[in-house]
Image 1 (cartoon, rainbow, N blue to C red):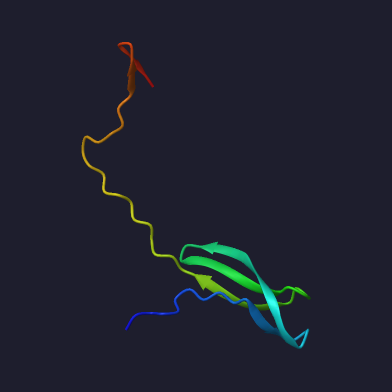
Image 2 (tube, one colour):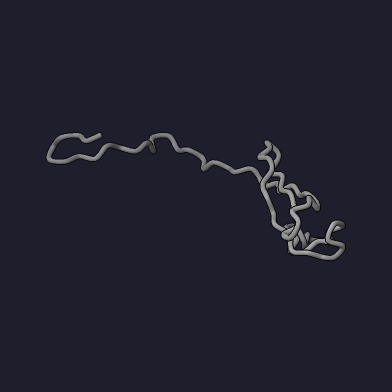
Amino acid sequence: MTRQFSDLVASELYCPRCRQARPVRERLLLVLPTGELYEYRCAECASSLGQRTVTEPPVRKAPSRPGSRARPARAGGRIIF
């Protein structure tokens, strides 16, 4: 079975201080080796309402091929670096 809701982002959450559902602002707290930690804050009173961690798949480097180094450009018989 596929994961249908892998990247949910809250737009409104219940705020106990305001006593109703309010729009939220997402704020980056930490950049961790395992992902990024975000905090949700009420748009009205700035109370902290929750957190979420975003884990991205590791970035793969393209395999390097031997002999595929960049070569300097030539201009009029001279090599320009």
